[in-house]
Amino acid sequence: MHTPSHLFFLPGALGNGAFWRPAAGLLACPAAQVHVAWPGFGGAAPQPGIRGLDDLATRLLAEVDRPSALVAQSMGGVVALLAALRQPERFTHLVLSATSGGMPPSSFGAQDWRPAIRTAHPDLPDWFTSYQEDLTPRLAALRIPTLLLWGDADPISPVAAGRRLASLLPRASLEVIPGGGHDLGCAFAGVVAPLIDRHLAARP
Image 1 (tube, rainbow, N blue to C red):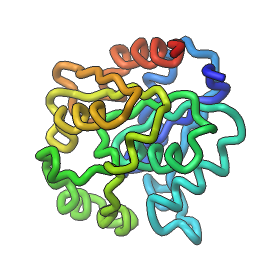
Image 2 (image 1 turned 90 degrees about the vertical axis):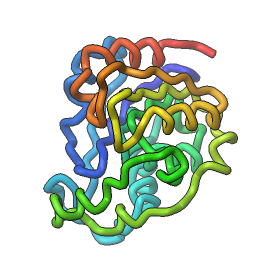
Image 3 (image 1 turned 180 degrees about the horizontal axis):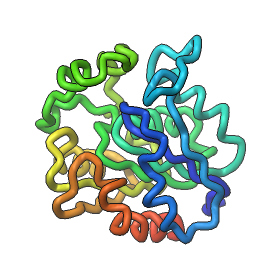
């Protein structure tokens, strides 16, 4: 089955559950939309047992009960990959935007964003900034069609990260948005929505 019945939109580390709504509102894809909020992020109440990105992936998998696509930003992209690596049969498509993809940031020259975000948002859980698992060796096994959305003006996740992911994921395509920063999924909603629609409609 290649058509998703649900689209799960995953935010980044700030937990902004509205991040993807501008682009989601422009999609022609008829799949039901689910905008995920992370416990403990963006003002959402913490939940016992959520102590890492693997726990967020477990929580996400508990919500996915039919063929679905994941549309994910930044930290959400790592959660999406963790979930897809664990149970790839649940997912028809992935859309990953401006994410490390579980790769070490030093491997693609990324700016270290962690000190600034800790200072600006001391209320966020501290465990997400210490995540260090390297998913690189596992990504070649993931054969879900994947759209990579990157901006060429993003110091946090530079285009080099997107190119590296495109080389590791067997069925990935990379779209680079001129002038796009780390928030391109929201700020460039009118640009990314048609790309997402085209990706979700494509057949192998």
